Length: 70
Image 1 (tube, helix red, strand yellow):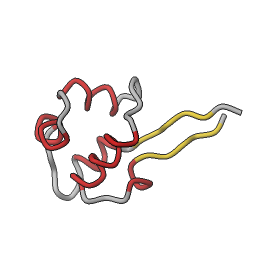
Image 2 (cartoon, rainbow, N blue to C red):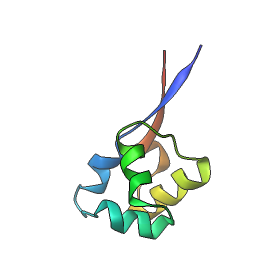
Image 3 (cartoon, rainbow, N blue to C red):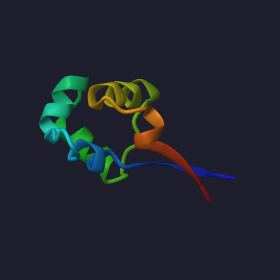
Image 4 (cartoon, rainbow, N blue to C red):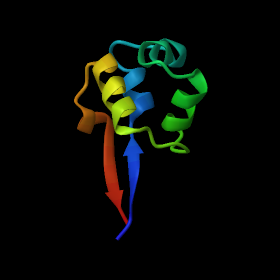
């Protein structure tokens, strides 16, 4: 059984305390293109990056990222 990492990063990032893709990228040490790729589902972040993103946005990791089983 395979699974795919899903996310609602764009929704969280633009929510009650909005942040641009560039601001988030700067906070977690990646390029804006990496944030775009994660949001669109083309790229799955490493566990380290996923944790940095959740901390930067002050959300629990599982509120942003989850595994969807096929």
